[in-house]
Amino acid sequence: MRDIAPTPATTEKLLPAADVATALNLSLTAVYRLVRSGDLPSHRFGKGKVRPRGVRIPESAVEAYLNGSLITPTVAPEEAA
Image 1 (tube, helix red, strand yellow):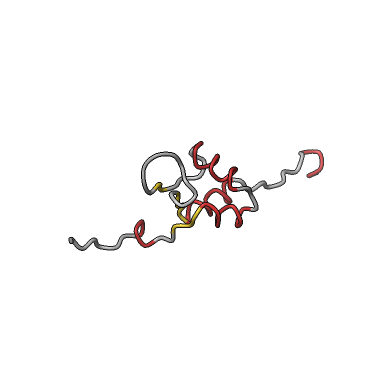
Image 2: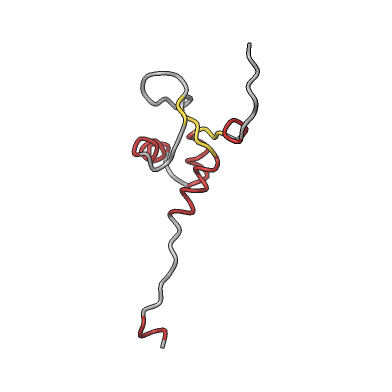
C-alpha cells in the first residue's frame, strides 16, 4: 500500500449529513437538497443514490455556506441623514 502525504483536503474533518442537519437546524432532506443543488459541496462514498451513510460534507463547506447566507441590514439613505 502506498503512503499518501496528508494535505489540507485530506486532514479536514468530514461531517455526516445528519450532523450538518443538526448544526444548521435543518431536516436531513433539506441538507440532501443543498448537496444535490451544489450549494453545499460534499464527498460521496460508494456508488448509486445518495445514502445517509454515503455523504460527507467538509466542515469548511458548512462554514462557507453559513457565511454566504449571512444577512447584513442596510440603512436607507433618508434614515442615514
